[in-house]
Image (tube, rainbow, N blue to C red; front, top):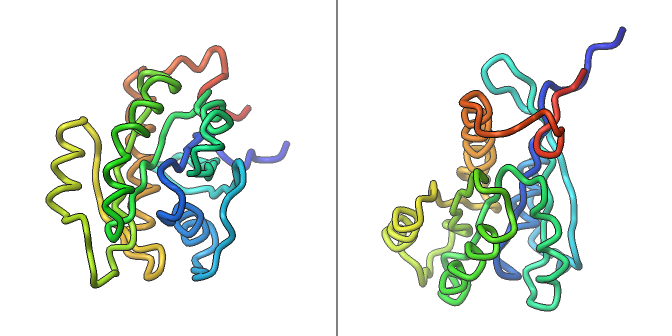
Length: 190
């Protein structure tokens, strides 16, 4: 009998305004590469990667959602079954930071109660910033989120953003915060 590819499957979402680098973060995490020219995401794109947490193989199924308002109703459907979300803003665009509360409300209204949300300030390699590290950190503390800054271009903290999210989901799973009997959240392979 063949060994299964993974022990658990975690569904993650990338959410936030258009142009903050969600697709680039996904590409950097799954393929270890950066593309400066990227087409706007229409609806949802998808990627995956198997990683190791403790002695478990975890498959991260990552859904890259469109940030435009026109796609918000479609995007909301993808919250179902998600155990984690990376809420992304661009440190060089204050507007993307100011919209975080709306994205967070969407996540909390449409996802399961125990969803792990990590706030990600992307493009920290930029010289010109409109949002300081301290502001991002403050927003995260006020809303009970984990926080880090990343650069999809250089790869800085990209691994950490995804793997720290997966580790927190795994710890929640071990603490009994998810019901696997319905197999609707994470899936154990058999």
